[in-house]
Image (cartoon, rainbow, N blue to C red; front, side, top):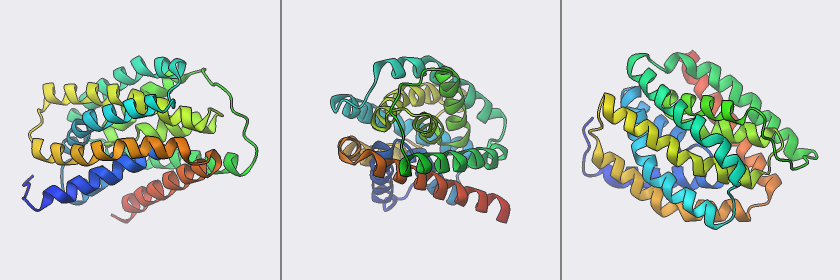
Length: 250
């Protein structure tokens, strides 16, 4: 992929917007950037490797920001950590050898359903509770989907936790904190298998994301929970309806 000089600020802006959204609602960094890069004709394996390379920096900043704002719940973080790392390593290995495009429509349908569940809970009464059952399995599947699809850790893990009754800010903060380790594991696996050559592209995306990380964590802390849940649900539905339309109109 050729990286022209005028592309630098485009990808800085894309990284800033993607991280601002991701830090605020706990998802869409990979989805936004993957959509942009796939539209430019970049192969899926290179897209995922580049996005996860940039996320190593942006998610680290986001994790520290969420922790400093008190958005991370230690028990949830620990439950997601190791399964997420294992899922990321396996997903990166699979993507190098098997195309991940076939999974997109099934993931999109699941996420649309989860978006509807979240909006329904936001419009009704939703008691806050700590949900710990099968969190490890969720983390593994979320990381696997994220790595194969070039994005999806936040939508799969964050939306499921919120839909099951977890506190919205703690779910978003904890999922963002674990995401650093998931992206690091995926990036190391990509480096060992196909390598990563687009360092200028990764750097420009990461630069924009680093500036946005504190703003996203601050917004997550300040935005009212019900409104935040509605925004999360709408983003999930819109992005995944778009994915389905692209799949079935090609």
